[in-house]
Structure formats: structure tokens, C-alpha cells
Amino acid sequence: MKAKIVITPKKAVLDPQGKTVQNALAYLGYQGVSAVHVGKYLEVELTGTDAAAARQALDEACHRFLSNPVIEDYRLEIVE
Amino acid sequence: MHFAVLQFPASNCDQDAVHAVRVLGHTAACVWHKETSLGGADAVIVPGGFSYGDYLRTGAIARFSPVMQAVQTFAAAGGLVIGICNGFQILCEAGLLPGALIRNRSLQFRCEYVFLKTATTNSPFTHRIPPDQWLRLPIAHGEGCYFADEATLASLRAHDQILWQYCSAGGEITDGANPNGSLLNIAGVCNEARNVAGLMPHPERACEPILGSDDGRLVFASMIAALENRRPAAAA
Image (cartoon, rainbow over all chains, first blue to last red; front, side, top):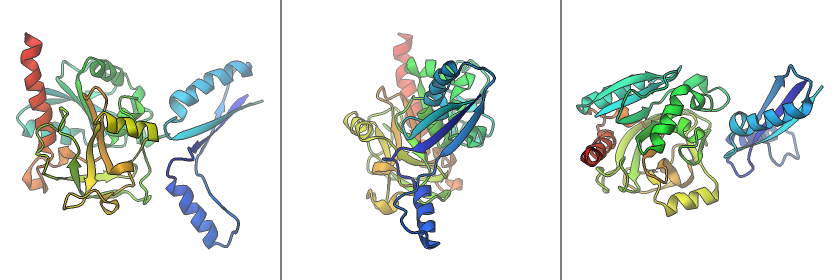
């Protein structure tokens, strides 16, 4: 079992990396890009089998430590 | 007065902070991040650097160090705590200060002198700073762009918690004088109780004329004077 966690900057937060990547895509000729948001992806390997308990624990960890709620949002997924 | 200067793996302004306090005629000692006591210090400096390699987010791992529990208790009891650069990032992550520091608008590490306008002298960190004197201090950071949501910014203004703002050599708060994209040109803030402060510029690197500026002395001199004013009251 593992957890897949995607952390992205909140929409209201200035994201200069995303903006720069967007500009570079346009420069390379990729059309139709309205915004790019650069975040992080974490894969957490788990030893247990209780998905609900793992979700609860990691949800707390995401809120407390893995993301900063002032500037970031996260998505958490538990997979087999 | 005695200052505790915290030391995390990859702190790199700790010795500068100790030296600055000694230049002002007071004592300071480093306190390793695994310590659980601040050694009876009168004030705490959380110094600059790249604690834990800035892994995950700046300050995110350092804030859970054992010594930070002691800092939380010290701050809750009204003790003076100042975070400089990475120290500011750590205090924000720890929830001791509002907001967060994100990547500079330019995506570049900025290492240069800036001018700071002291937005309020109503704090233990600024009360000795002449309001009409702009501080000239060095910055050295890649993630110093101050961010807080609208409600937090409104609260900071309402409670007079913005201590320093980046300004031009003429004291004007302009976008051109903003080295990192900080909202409202914010360079430093304090908490609502006014005993915890953080700033991105480095006052500890500017306490002697030979270093190019001694304006940083005013920040530490403010803290020392505030502590000296407190002491008789505490003894009484």
C-alpha cells in the first residue's frame, strides 16, 4: 500500500516557477496553455493494510507537516 | 543580557549572530537543535542558513526540532524571539508568526544591500530605531517573498504588526525597491503579542562600520533596552 500526495501552490499565491514554465512552453510553440502550476509529488510507501487508518494519519501529516496550508493545497490518494 | 542562538544542521549565520551580540557588549551562546532548554537566556535568536537543506520547504523540518518546543514555551511566556532570514521562515512554519515565505518573484537568489523603513516603533525590536532613518542591511535569500492571505494582511495592519518594509534610498515604498515580491513590501513582522519578530534582511551582518553598515545594531539595541526595562519589573 502506498500514498500518493500532490502538493500545489494555492491559486492566490504568486507562482513564479509556474509562470516561467508557461512562458517557456509558449516560446517552444505549445499553444493553448492558460496557466502552469509547479508543485511537488510525494510517494509514501506504507507497511500497514488499513487504508482508512493510513488516510487519516497521512491527512493529518499533510496538514501539519507535508504541506503548508498558508500557501499550498494537497491531494492525498491511498493505493494498493 | 544573554542571548541563545539556535543551531540547526546547516545554520550558517549562528556565529555572526553570536558575534553581533558580543559587539554590543552582551553575551550569547549557541544552543544545538537537540537541546530541550534555552539555558536561561533572556532572548532567543533563530539565525539564518539552510536548516535541513531547505528540504520539503524552508524551515519545515527545523520547526519540529526539540529546541523549538522550548522556544514555543519561551515565546508563550512573553520571551523575546527574533528570527532572521531562515529563522524568519522557521518561525512562520512554527506558527509563531503569521504568513509564509515563498520563492522570490525573480526566481533568483538575491544577495545585496536593501533599505528598510521601520513601519512602527511600537515593538521591542524597533523602539530604538529613529523613525526617519532607513536601515541599510544586507539580504541573502532565494525564498523571501512574504505571503499572507487578505484577512491576515488586514489583521497585520490593524494590529500594527508590520515592522519593516523594503524602501528606496529615499524612503519610498516602491515596487522597484522590493527585492523579492513580498506583499506590501514586507521585510519583517511581529506577532500580535509583539514579543516574536522575524525579518529576511540580516541585522547581525551589519553591526560594525567595517562591515559596510552598523544599522543592524539598532535592532539588537532595541531588544536589549526592552529587556533592561523589563528586568526591574520582573524583580519587583
